[in-house]
Amino acid sequence: PVTKGADITTRPRRDPRHPRDYLDAGADIIQTNTFGATALVLGEYSLAPEARRINREAAGIARRAADDATAADPDKPRFVYGAMGPTTRTISVTGGLTFDELAADYHQQAAGLIEGGADVLVLETGQDTINIKAGLEGIDRARAEMNVDVPAAVQGTVEPMGTLLAGQDAEAFYTSLAHRNLLWVGFNCATGPEFMTTTSGR
Image 1 (tube, one colour):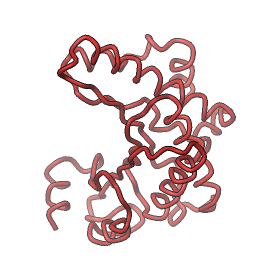
Image 2: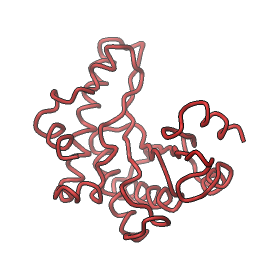
Image 3: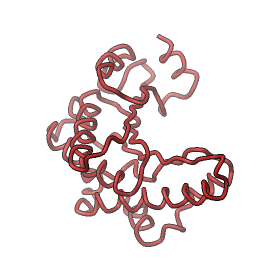
């Protein structure tokens, strides 16, 4: 996270995954380099106060690249997804944080991503539905603060035993989120596409 944070804010072209490379390869959607950019995670490297700015800068890098690519080919619009990872703690499994504390951290991350120009906020690699709900609460707070309605999506991650790390199966995971107006609910990461396909089809 220290290297990523420094590269995003001071040396963005040194990031080997610079979004322009993906756009040049034909991508329609690029994702911000902010998977670990909550204040909780950045705080492990004394960067917590910079969380909102790092997210804003990261989204801005992706936004400018996407806009340049769209301007070069108006028939192929490009979009920016703001990545919001699961952090290094879960309320149900590791403990060490409260719902309100996590929601406040996600609020700052979401606000920075919105300020930088993200089209969608993606809570990804979710391991605990309580953490995910804290993330959605943070997104709601950022939307209210900024008077915008940026869409959100959620992606969980399944372990080899077929559940999230905190124990929820796919049905429980979806049921806990079905009342929300989300762009999508899905799975990513962890056990690979074959297992995720099986889990998603339950």
